[in-house]
Image (cartoon, rainbow, N blue to C red; front, side, top):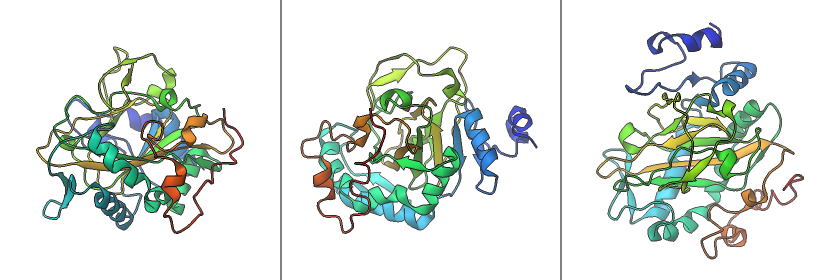
Length: 304
């Protein structure tokens, strides 16, 4: 069945779509068994790829446990639920607790190596169709309950990263994520309308992009550990609120582009290094065991 015909079928008849929530359409599910050309065409049509179980579970569990080791005592792992749980005060990016734990997470060598795994790099190259540059700015997302209204609002990375059309984001779930825990949603096809006006709003990043009146359908599904979402730099995406009583949501992401494409110089900084004192690359690299992924970005040929 062709992508064009398949995408026009009702949800229940589309073999690439799994059941979702009322009010949203579920993600179109892609597979690594499909040709590179099919995956790139789908990426260009919808502005994203959603691949279930792409990163192996052991790698995700190791990354989850490494993050939790730095998040204690604020977030711990509940073995009965097999989920992270918040133990006290809720927090979001830029809160004092977040500023306390985040430099420790950024200093984890395994956190930065995660997106340089051969299998992950292969997916980036498939999307790009060429060799890629992986941004050194790696991001951990920590969503705790009790901060309704401060979740990430609709936005485009093309605006926040000053990025061109070859940049894309890659996001990986580290454990099961349900609607109540705050899933990531994308506005399908929104990348085709260019970079949008923005306005100030509460939530991570502090700005929201314009959503046009006819854009009423978002794509979203529950996630399991290892599920991957790759999205175009101009694809509008956002987070749902974490409405659980205790569960925290952990995920990791970064950005990449065609090697040699223009990259704005601030993308070479550590995530939140511009506002947290002492969060710089020398501090991050200080206790690493290997140098392979230290300063690999210094000689990138096309900064602006």
